[in-house]
Length: 66
Image 1 (cartoon, rainbow, N blue to C red):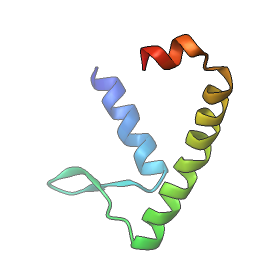
Image 2: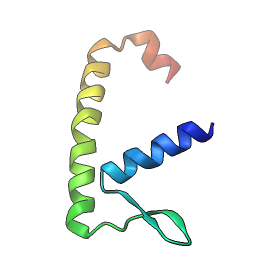
Image 3: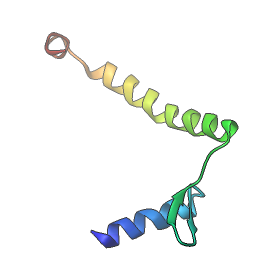
Image 4: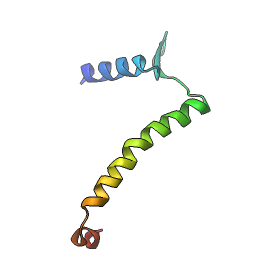
């Protein structure tokens, strides 16, 4: 489990989303408003495509279950 946490923190650091601070360990970096908007814009692209593909495959039984 510790290896997974270390790997996750390393990836966050590589992405510029976390940094190691002495006497604190890994700390999540704050984002500017422009960076935050960019993150949500990037996330929206695959989510919209997934919804579009899912909507093409839904049938009457699926609608009834929802």
